[in-house]
Image (cartoon, rainbow over all chains, first blue to last red; front, side, top):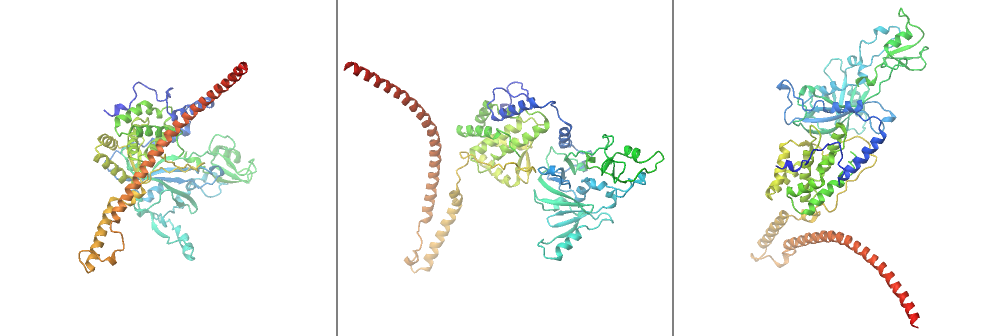
Length: 307
Length: 277
């Protein structure tokens, strides 16, 4: 049949480049491989690469247990890039982001719930006098408001009574003088699905939570769902790519991730200084738990906590 | 996305050879493919992550040749190329071919053309790709990427592959000519109706040439022929350029040789003549 015309005549190893090839591509590949053999010390997948590959392909082809969760044919699949709100010089060329796959029929609130940002986990307050009482209320529970901004409309999260309309300030500001920003409107996040929106591909949109933590969202691709994709509705929004952030380690043991940060600390060599829980207590408190020296201590959540 | 080095040249070599073979049969394409052992283009990649990226870029490059403005033969060649690359790729699950929504009617028209011209092997190949679910139907043809480009790459079309741009023809199509004819007739009839003599229009009303539609058609045909001749001449000129370059080299070698010979002959003649004298 037609397929057999393409196949190789003899058994070949796909990793070995044939010697007598006339293809230009393979000449370049061979050069790159030779250069690699000379310079690389250990040639195997590093953990970042394994992680990236796993993330991309772990959900491919998955089917749900119950048929009600099956994604239907004709469903749209959007690929969104959600960027971190940090601005470092080293991120000039390639801003760190996570890539999420979303179904067209999913509500905006489902996307909001799946975005994991370190500012949600912050704990406010100075706890040097009572270090054991620290992690009680994280910011995610206290400040639940958030909004999306797509094409001139602010979609506010109004599921809980504590949620405030963060976008009202912006709308009032734009309407107070003629600033040239068309008609900005307001809507509820939980009433809309992605199919209801009209979006531009590649255009930056905004997600704001915690009052001032802003993430840029860009839609990179819209396509129809395919047989080989993950068809389990419960797994969406699906994270397929995540930027790896280095965690800050404790200053003392350099092993554990920092959980406390101190300022104006007479016992610490630098300001601010990071400690893990054990080293923090050993250095700053005596056996009875009394505070030693003067310092201000705040619980610290490292951005790399989601690695 | 930065391109795979050397891949564009390889694809263009294969498609160029296919174009020269001047046929759209799959057997011919398969021969050319086997000659070059094109399926080895995926070899030498080390691990799964890089391999899937490279495969995606390869399919994207091949897919560009499948759409207009490339000539019909090139597009059929691109269809075969996509079929070959899709089936010989090493990724599991297979990477798919992206077709944008705006290009899909064009692709369907292409398939209809193939069916009408009875190129059943091409139709079979297209249908088997559809059945194998090889396509992703997307909103945009290129997947976006957010690295700042160090160098913006211009997409250059190879001149010979392009269908000679028929701007004149696309403006003056058969439909347009038919409509012009109808309007012209209608106009003539109106003139007859309002003039005194019902059978032909008044002399005072004849403001345009009567047979301008026919003249227009002749002019466009002439233009098309001229363009085709120019393409042929261009191709011939390239060939003759190469041949004449070779000839020039040979003649210059010959002239060097003959110069030496004539110099020797002169010296001998002088010496003999000296002897004679």
